[in-house]
Length: 477
Image 1: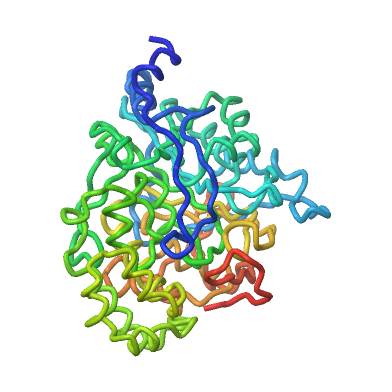
Image 2: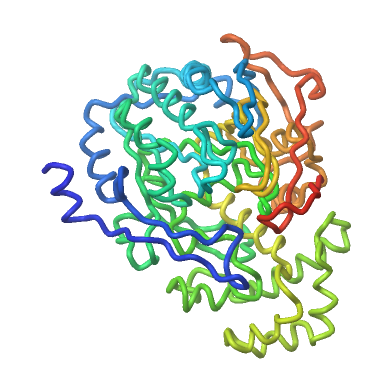
């Protein structure tokens, strides 16, 4: 069966909707499409199944695999000039070359035949004003293809990239398809209009271990979660107006289907969004008391002194209107909720809810390895507000909490203060105290302990909190 015939039989994705001002999520409103130069999930699975026969699965280098709580730093030396438009010119070929080499420093050739590999980069909406091949909002296209070429050289030919947070328009404008086509790397575009447009065969389900806060069961787009799939989580080093430091914990959001994957829903709108907008099984997959769970955690963290945790000082207004005793009576009535929230004006307990959903997700969905592309990094909002910086660093590790703690420090923040990392440690995901994390440098083919984190170049990447517009202020934790 040829590709076009397969699409006619199986493609199900269509455009993704835009959120509203009050009940949307921390992304701009933008029209989106599903498959274009990429392919749908079912077609991707079909192609991967065909490719298993001649595939050799790579193995994580033993020094990394045997130290699952350690973090490994690889410095690059990309030389590029910041042009008048604010981006770095002449970096693309260098990034590709470094990525290909880095693949051979993290993986070795394996002996097991069959299987498949999924690379999950951070691919998001890119407004025209910053659309450039090396823009710091997305995992570099050149890093993706260079890394894939490094895996090809190890015999791992059965690879797919995956995206849900971005769309065809951006992929075409940014030249992503042309880059991927140059090495015949397929892109599964998993951004469908509604959750109901995914077939059962396209999803895997993951139970949140321990004590879930917001949801107890989370789906991923296949092949993530398949027993014979190697899952490489490949985030970008950047800031985000809600996720704060966008690293490996946040990035797995891109592997979760539409509806369930919108972690950025407001606390007040969760039930309405799930039932009436996304059409997902709210009763089955979300904790019955998640509203109370989030509020209880929020109050606990306010008392613990979390920085900027009620940034707009909304909770006192909520209490004045009756707090939970009044809110619980609204029972998902959108009109009543809008009226209740009118003068509360926005992100009530928003950061707490996002963080708890992100940690629920991180506990349920486990990448085989996390590789943070920080060759070019970005501050600001995660979208058009911000500036690119030549950071020249790649961070690798198996444990997402430790990887993000080190990445957060390198970005200029204190991981002991970073709220989502404090919550991650509190919930047993990992460690955010750098003095308790083994950190190594990979130089050449040698892995050597890092004696002091201060030996590493540190950036100053502040967050444009809760806003896509320039506020003139960058916050740090």
